[in-house]
Figure 1 (cartoon, helix red, strand yellow):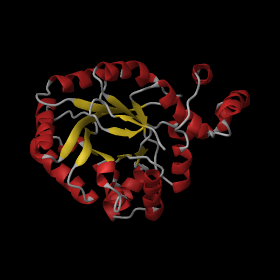
Figure 2 (tube, rainbow, N blue to C red; figure 1 turned 90 degrees about the horizontal axis):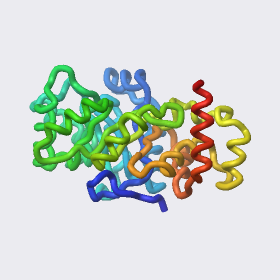
Figure 3 (cartoon, rainbow, N blue to C red; figure 1 turned 90 degrees about the vertical axis):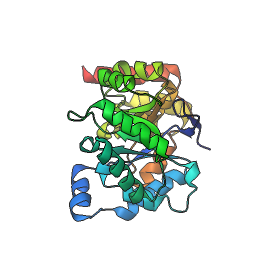
Length: 287
């Protein structure tokens, strides 16, 4: 059974690991311009594999071109057991455009509401107060349950929080992994202070953290002696659960086999000494 913990201060429990449905720029272009989604069946099956393995946190975005795949994949599953997160692009941050974007996302996924609706990037053109007011109205209308942000630095996060009138920002989404830990020190303290969640994208470092040579044979052997024949991807993901209580990695759901492998990163914990060895290893590699 996959462990589930509370997502921020929502009272809703989600799996320690979620899945992401961002593929690559060319895939997005093909989906948006030509309505072609290569590997469609495999990607749908990957999402379904995640759900079957007990993962209920699924992240997508209007810009990804994958909302339709999410909608197709979740048919037949209990909607109330899923936690679906999507994102709106900055060009749609005005009140009228944001409402229409949300409606389109819901239609593409076949949903009546989305659990978490996130601002994908900060906007340079629309005031954050207008956007957050519109987001709060979406909550009032029942179209979204919780409000999130993505790729907001510390000062922009604080600014967004300051204009909220009736609801709170439940989460932020930022890159974080063993190789790139900058947001652990710059963003995570504020996440904890405000009782938020952090969705960590690129948790496997663009694939670098699935390369066993990066870890060194001795370190991998030490961890496997204690935890069995775990893969380095599972080690990299378990680092999140073993160290943080409010961070949810969302590795890409590209194939059923990779999703299943990643799901086995849950249900066990690295020891503090192992966490320290991992962090020391990757800090030294960057020097």
